[in-house]
Amino acid sequence: MSVTLTSRAAEHIGRYLQKRGKGIGLRVGVRTTGCSGMAYKLEYVDEADGQDQVFESHGIKVFIDPKSLPYLDGTQLDYERQGLNEGFKFSNPNEKATCGCGESFTV
Image: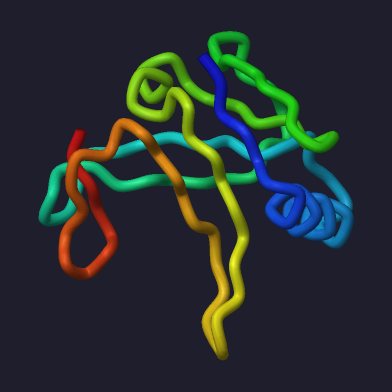
């Protein structure tokens, strides 16, 4: 089981953690919401939770809670800029469908 970052995503997270002046990594999870049932949630981690699974990718620690891990296994997180828009992009092999607004997915 693993969750990875592209080098672009790792660089973006590293810059943000440095700008914040604190933090040890990024927590990635899922929550129940939206048209399709699930949505990704991201938060910067200042203190580790003993239950989290921790992966390291390009020098950045990625924390996943045990309930989210089955939905995120094999996911790669990228950071993209397209015109004026920028943000994280998930490549999740577990996704079966996404909603039209792009905010939620189903497995």
